[in-house]
Image 1 (cartoon, rainbow over the protein chains, first blue to last red):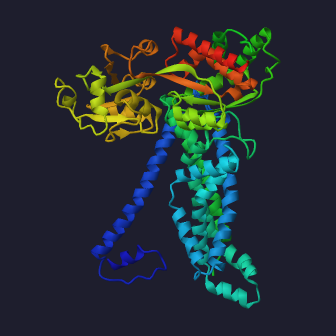
Image 2 (cartoon, one colour):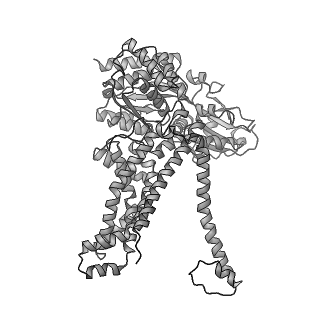
Image 3 (cartoon, rainbow over the protein chains, first blue to last red):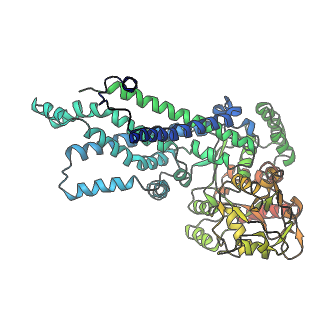
Length: 299
Length: 326
C-alpha cells in the first residue's frame, strides 16, 4: 500500500507517509482533476466542432480570396486576415512599451504613501473590468472623431491598446514584483544606478512573466469584434490595408458577419475562419513561450 | 452620365462569371463598344457605405457586381445599424447610408445641422415572416390583434389556448431578434405601434439561425424574421398567414411586392449623400445599384421591386439628379 503510494508521487517531492490516503485528500484530488477536465474537454470539443464544420472550406481560397456574398464557394477572408495582422501588430507596438513602462514606474519609482499613486493603481484595476463596447464608444468619440483619425487601422489599434493596457500593466507589475529584492540590492551595492539596475537586472528577469501577460492581453484584443464594429470595422472590403490610414476589417467581424448569414455555406466559412484565428493565436502563443524559455533566469 | 448597356446583360454577365478573369474580359469588351470610357473605364476612388445590417447584403452584392466592371473603385460596406449609418452619413464619414426604415425627424435635423443633403431611394422589399414549428398543426393564420396580444410589453400570454380558444393547450415559446436589430424595430413598430415596444421574456438572438433552431425544436415555438430566412429553412418551419384587416394573407414575393401582406412588409432604402454624388465613382455606383436592383435583390435574397416600384425608383433617381444640377 505504502510503496505504491510513494511511487505515484513525482520524484523529489518529500511525502509524509501515513496509513492510506485520507478520504478528504481523495476528494480534493478528484476535484482538481474534474476542474481540469472542464477546461480541457470544453476546449477539445470546441476545436473539434470548428474543425469539422470548417473542414470543407479550409482551403487556399480562404486566405487568397476576398469576401463574396453572391457565391460563398469563392469567398475568402483575405482582407480580414491581413486586417487582423495589421491591427494586432500595431496594438502590440502601442500598448506593450506603454504598459511595461507604466508598470516599472508603479513598482520601482512610485511612492505608495502618496494618495495619487494609490488612486492610479485603483483606477487601472477598475479599467480592466470596463466592458469593451465602452472603449469602442471612447474610440469613436475621441480617437476617430476628436483626433480626426477616422475609421482606420490606426483608430482600431489605438482603441484596442487602451482596452488591453490595464492587463499589460497589471501582469507586468506582477512580473517585476517577482524579481527578488536581493538582486536589486546586490546591483545597487555594486555601484549600479537605479536605471542600470532596472535595465540590466530587473527587466530581463521579468521578461518571462511580462511575455505571458502580454500574450493574454493580445489574445483578448485579437478576438474583439464589438468595439471595432462601432468604430466602423467593415463587413465587406475587397482590399488589404495599405497603411495605418487604411480602412479595414478583422477576423472576428468577418466571422460574426458570416455566422449571421442564412446560407449554410457561410456557416462553414465562419468555422474555417475561426480555425485561422486560432492558428494566428497559437503562433503568437508559441512566440511568447519561446521568449519565456529564452529569458528564464534561475536564481 | 449615361448607362453603358442593358443592365440585365451587365448583371447576367457578372453573375455568370464563374471564371472571373474570362468574364471580366468579355464584359469589358461590351463596355468598350458602348463607350463608357477607357480600358478599365478609368473610374477610381472609394465609396463608403454603412448602416443597417439587413440592407448590407444588398449593398455588398451591388458592390461586388460593380467592382467586376470597375476594378479601380473600392467599395466598403459596414454594418453599424440604421441609426449608426445615418449618424455617419450626417457626419460626412460615409457616402451612402443603408436603412431598413425611413430617416426620422431627429436624424433629419442632425443632418440639416451638419449641412448634409441626401436622397432617398427604395431599392428592395423585405417581408417579415412569422413562423411556427412543423409540429404545430393547429395555427394557420393570426390576426395582427392576436400578434399584438402575444408580443405587447408585459404580455402574460404563455399558452396557445390564450391566443385563440380553439387552439389546444400547448405552451407558447417565443423567439425573435434582439433589440439592436432593425427587424425588431420594424416588427414592434408594425405590431405594437411603437419601435422597441415588446415583451422582454422571449429568447432574443441577433442571429436568425438561432431563432430557426429554437422554433423548429419546440412544438409551441413561434418567432419572426425576414422572409429569406424562412425560404432557406422551409423544411424545418411552417409559415403563418397574417390578417391585417383584409383577411389572411401569406407572405410571398407577390404579396410583399404589391403590399397586400400587411403590415409586415417593408421597404429597404439607401440614402446617398448629395455631396458624394458629385464624385463620379459614387454616382456610377448608385446608378448601377438602381439599374441592377432586381438582380441585386435576388442575389441578396430579398424580394425585388415590383414594376411600379421600379418606375418610382427611376423617377426618384432622375429627380435627385435634377436637384443637383440647377
